Length: 178
Ligand code: KMT
Ligand code: NI
Image (cartoon, rainbow, N blue to C red; front, side, top):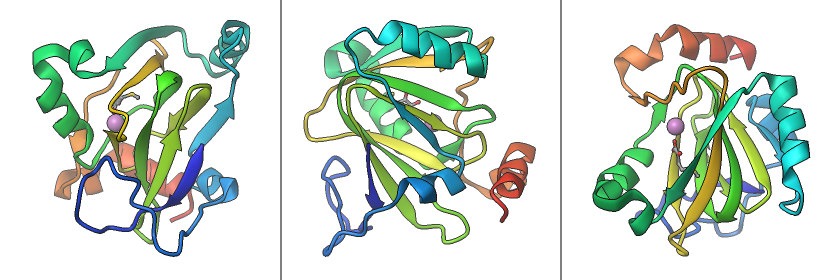
């Protein structure tokens, strides 16, 4: 897990977009935003992942393979959609099996982008109501387990006037003390 403020410069979304000089983001800052993460080494990950899943009530999971081959004809559309700033009404939980990529999350109240680079063995929980987006990095491939409670609730609500007053958004802001 590598976290830092995004530079907001134009250019390829898959580039690192580190500031110059870099502005690292601490685990404490992510905790304040209610973004959770664990490291579970891939070698024999199943038991540990099952334990976290049990504790947090994630009963189900599926596999997403974000590559041209994995997404087929939906590739361009999906890649574009992942990178639109959006929120969900439930957590977005990802355990990275291979490859790498970037989740960008909006810090509140600054509204700055924090870029989180994920690698195999990272388990990331993006809370309901936080604005975020995802992009592949320059390696162009990531494979991840998507964990969820009962049914996947992955409808992305792109940021607009309505999401600003979405109850899950307001609850999120309350939880993080904004
Ligand atoms: C999402 O919902 O943004 C994704 O599933 C992105 C790919 S998971 C590494
Ligand atoms: Ni999302």
